[in-house]
Image (cartoon, rainbow, N blue to C red; front, side):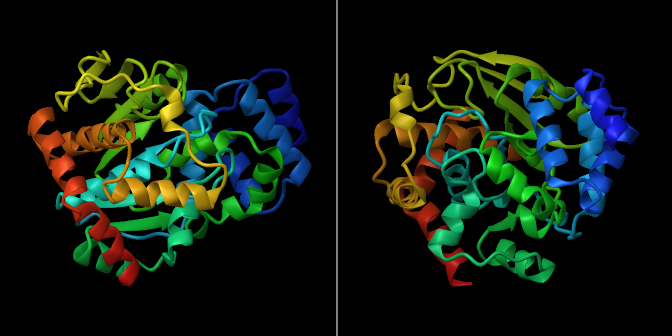
Length: 332
């Protein structure tokens, strides 16, 4: 371990196998808290290489609790976090809107580490009970259309490093890895990334998979589509630039002011925002942002036009179907 740290401090990179071994050692408790913080700090100073990310991911997926949900043609909408923008919970809301259209969603998330409120904080605060039981998750997908995978109960390694992450209070290598670690292995993924370099690394990695994906990065630094700027998008069809005008798919000319996307100061405030938007009482900017993310997700699941998928997403939100999905999920 000492040798690896020395090499990392000398700005050397790890091979795929070295990266994998590092996380296995971490899971076995052979790396102390100070060393964990040192490793996290190093990767805050530079983006991990493709080989390192693959090695880290392989270790975490091999060590994870296994479930099989591949019978469902489902999607996950998830971002890396760590963009320091403190937005309300856009991706989680988009998941409920997508489920409200009749599609299946396997959402993966966790408690906050670098943000004010993570998706797990929202759902726990609303009364959702986390589970890693395959039969329970399948039941949720079949009866409601969405299930939620709370990362720490699937990835034991996260318990090992949770104290270090909390002490740091900023994004870590685990923000980078989070969207890649959904134990439900959904066939479709809308992945938000907080910087362009990492978006390209994700793209190189996903080109060697059978996943149906869209990797999005807002050019002003958000890890999701925010309508505050143009975006870069990477799919199996290649790289594409979307101007802010092309993103105005609801027929409204809207460029969102970043202040309109701010989340609350604590979990309770963010839950209120979450319920407000899901109840159809969000502001124009809040609504358009979640609908645009839901539209991109739906376009991964079907061959419809953006306009038709936007209409589906809007109906899900405005008719109360999306909110009803939440009610059903909490009642199981």
